[in-house]
Image (cartoon, rainbow, N blue to C red; front, side, top):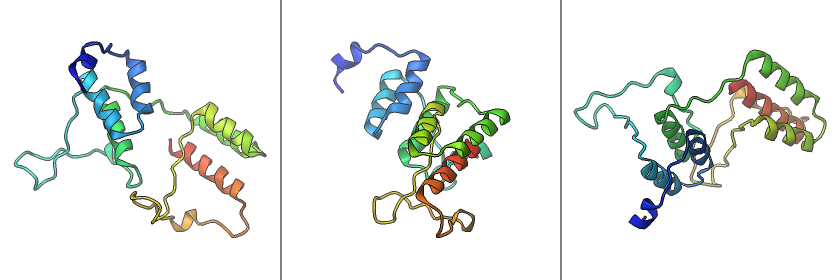
Length: 163
Protein backbone atom coordinates (compact mmCIF):
# COMPACT_ATOMS: atom_id res chain seq x y z
CA UNK A 1 0.00 0.00 0.00
CA UNK A 2 1.47 3.37 -0.91
CA UNK A 3 1.30 6.48 1.25
CA UNK A 4 -1.06 8.39 -1.06
CA UNK A 5 -3.76 5.75 -0.47
CA UNK A 6 -3.26 5.94 3.28
CA UNK A 7 -3.38 9.77 3.33
CA UNK A 8 -6.70 9.91 1.47
CA UNK A 9 -8.29 7.18 3.58
CA UNK A 10 -11.36 8.13 5.60
CA UNK A 11 -11.75 6.18 8.84
CA UNK A 12 -14.95 4.21 9.08
CA UNK A 13 -17.68 4.54 11.68
CA UNK A 14 -18.08 1.62 14.07
CA UNK A 15 -20.96 0.07 12.06
CA UNK A 16 -19.11 0.54 8.76
CA UNK A 17 -15.98 -1.00 10.29
CA UNK A 18 -17.86 -4.07 11.55
CA UNK A 19 -19.46 -4.56 8.12
CA UNK A 20 -16.10 -4.07 6.36
CA UNK A 21 -14.45 -6.69 8.60
CA UNK A 22 -17.24 -9.19 8.01
CA UNK A 23 -17.13 -8.56 4.24
CA UNK A 24 -13.38 -9.24 3.89
CA UNK A 25 -12.77 -12.24 1.65
CA UNK A 26 -9.01 -12.58 2.02
CA UNK A 27 -6.33 -12.19 4.66
CA UNK A 28 -4.68 -9.40 2.66
CA UNK A 29 -7.92 -7.37 2.64
CA UNK A 30 -8.30 -7.86 6.37
CA UNK A 31 -4.66 -6.94 7.09
CA UNK A 32 -5.00 -3.77 4.99
CA UNK A 33 -8.13 -2.80 6.92
CA UNK A 34 -6.39 -3.48 10.26
CA UNK A 35 -3.46 -1.30 9.19
CA UNK A 36 -5.57 1.56 7.84
CA UNK A 37 -7.84 1.65 10.89
CA UNK A 38 -4.95 1.25 13.35
CA UNK A 39 -6.49 -1.75 15.12
CA UNK A 40 -4.30 -3.35 17.78
CA UNK A 41 -4.58 -7.12 18.23
CA UNK A 42 -3.46 -9.20 21.22
CA UNK A 43 -1.22 -12.11 20.33
CA UNK A 44 -1.80 -15.54 21.84
CA UNK A 45 1.36 -17.05 23.29
CA UNK A 46 2.26 -20.70 23.22
CA UNK A 47 3.67 -21.84 26.60
CA UNK A 48 7.13 -22.72 25.30
CA UNK A 49 7.35 -20.17 22.49
CA UNK A 50 8.66 -17.27 24.59
CA UNK A 51 9.41 -16.20 28.11
CA UNK A 52 6.08 -14.34 28.32
CA UNK A 53 3.29 -15.78 30.41
CA UNK A 54 0.73 -17.41 28.11
CA UNK A 55 -2.71 -15.86 27.82
CA UNK A 56 -5.25 -18.45 28.94
CA UNK A 57 -8.28 -18.69 26.68
CA UNK A 58 -11.66 -18.56 28.37
CA UNK A 59 -14.39 -20.97 27.25
CA UNK A 60 -15.87 -18.16 25.13
CA UNK A 61 -12.51 -17.73 23.40
CA UNK A 62 -12.19 -21.37 22.36
CA UNK A 63 -12.42 -21.52 18.59
CA UNK A 64 -13.88 -24.48 16.70
CA UNK A 65 -11.34 -26.52 14.77
CA UNK A 66 -13.53 -26.10 11.69
CA UNK A 67 -12.98 -22.34 11.42
CA UNK A 68 -10.73 -21.04 8.70
CA UNK A 69 -7.76 -18.83 9.62
CA UNK A 70 -9.61 -15.91 8.01
CA UNK A 71 -12.69 -16.46 10.18
CA UNK A 72 -10.58 -16.80 13.33
CA UNK A 73 -8.73 -13.57 12.54
CA UNK A 74 -12.01 -11.77 11.79
CA UNK A 75 -13.31 -12.90 15.19
CA UNK A 76 -10.16 -11.59 16.89
CA UNK A 77 -10.37 -8.24 15.05
CA UNK A 78 -14.04 -7.86 15.98
CA UNK A 79 -13.15 -8.67 19.59
CA UNK A 80 -10.33 -6.09 19.50
CA UNK A 81 -12.74 -3.31 18.50
CA UNK A 82 -15.16 -4.36 21.24
CA UNK A 83 -17.86 -5.92 19.06
CA UNK A 84 -19.99 -8.64 20.60
CA UNK A 85 -22.38 -10.35 18.21
CA UNK A 86 -26.00 -10.08 19.29
CA UNK A 87 -27.37 -13.23 20.85
CA UNK A 88 -30.77 -14.54 19.93
CA UNK A 89 -33.26 -14.82 22.77
CA UNK A 90 -34.89 -18.14 23.59
CA UNK A 91 -38.24 -16.95 22.20
CA UNK A 92 -36.58 -15.69 19.01
CA UNK A 93 -34.78 -19.02 18.51
CA UNK A 94 -37.94 -21.06 19.06
CA UNK A 95 -39.86 -18.83 16.61
CA UNK A 96 -37.09 -19.24 14.03
CA UNK A 97 -36.97 -23.02 14.54
CA UNK A 98 -40.74 -23.23 13.94
CA UNK A 99 -40.32 -21.18 10.74
CA UNK A 100 -37.55 -23.53 9.56
CA UNK A 101 -39.76 -26.56 10.18
CA UNK A 102 -42.62 -24.96 8.23
CA UNK A 103 -40.48 -24.35 5.10
CA UNK A 104 -41.51 -26.61 2.23
CA UNK A 105 -39.20 -25.37 -0.54
CA UNK A 106 -35.56 -24.46 -0.89
CA UNK A 107 -36.44 -20.90 -1.87
CA UNK A 108 -38.44 -20.43 1.37
CA UNK A 109 -35.57 -21.84 3.40
CA UNK A 110 -32.94 -19.68 1.67
CA UNK A 111 -35.13 -16.60 2.07
CA UNK A 112 -35.40 -17.30 5.80
CA UNK A 113 -31.64 -17.88 6.09
CA UNK A 114 -30.93 -14.58 4.36
CA UNK A 115 -33.56 -12.57 6.24
CA UNK A 116 -32.52 -13.88 9.67
CA UNK A 117 -28.76 -13.83 8.85
CA UNK A 118 -28.21 -17.47 9.81
CA UNK A 119 -24.58 -18.57 9.43
CA UNK A 120 -24.17 -22.22 8.40
CA UNK A 121 -20.95 -24.19 8.88
CA UNK A 122 -19.70 -25.66 5.59
CA UNK A 123 -18.47 -29.24 5.45
CA UNK A 124 -15.16 -29.80 3.69
CA UNK A 125 -14.22 -32.81 1.61
CA UNK A 126 -10.73 -34.04 2.61
CA UNK A 127 -9.14 -33.56 -0.80
CA UNK A 128 -11.18 -30.56 -1.94
CA UNK A 129 -9.09 -27.89 -0.23
CA UNK A 130 -6.32 -27.32 2.22
CA UNK A 131 -8.84 -26.77 5.04
CA UNK A 132 -9.14 -29.21 7.90
CA UNK A 133 -12.07 -31.55 7.15
CA UNK A 134 -14.98 -31.62 9.56
CA UNK A 135 -15.67 -35.16 10.74
CA UNK A 136 -19.34 -35.93 11.39
CA UNK A 137 -20.16 -37.25 14.85
CA UNK A 138 -22.46 -40.29 15.20
CA UNK A 139 -25.31 -37.93 16.20
CA UNK A 140 -24.88 -36.03 12.93
CA UNK A 141 -25.04 -39.12 10.72
CA UNK A 142 -28.19 -39.16 8.64
CA UNK A 143 -30.44 -42.01 7.61
CA UNK A 144 -30.25 -43.18 4.02
CA UNK A 145 -33.91 -42.17 3.63
CA UNK A 146 -33.29 -38.49 4.39
CA UNK A 147 -33.54 -36.06 1.51
CA UNK A 148 -30.95 -33.34 0.86
CA UNK A 149 -33.63 -30.75 1.70
CA UNK A 150 -34.24 -32.32 5.14
CA UNK A 151 -30.50 -32.49 5.80
CA UNK A 152 -30.17 -28.80 4.91
CA UNK A 153 -33.06 -27.94 7.24
CA UNK A 154 -31.30 -29.90 10.00
CA UNK A 155 -28.07 -27.94 9.37
CA UNK A 156 -29.97 -24.63 9.52
CA UNK A 157 -31.65 -25.71 12.77
CA UNK A 158 -28.26 -26.67 14.22
CA UNK A 159 -26.80 -23.30 13.19
CA UNK A 160 -29.65 -21.41 14.87
CA UNK A 161 -29.30 -23.40 18.08
CA UNK A 162 -25.52 -22.88 18.19
CA UNK A 163 -25.61 -19.13 17.46
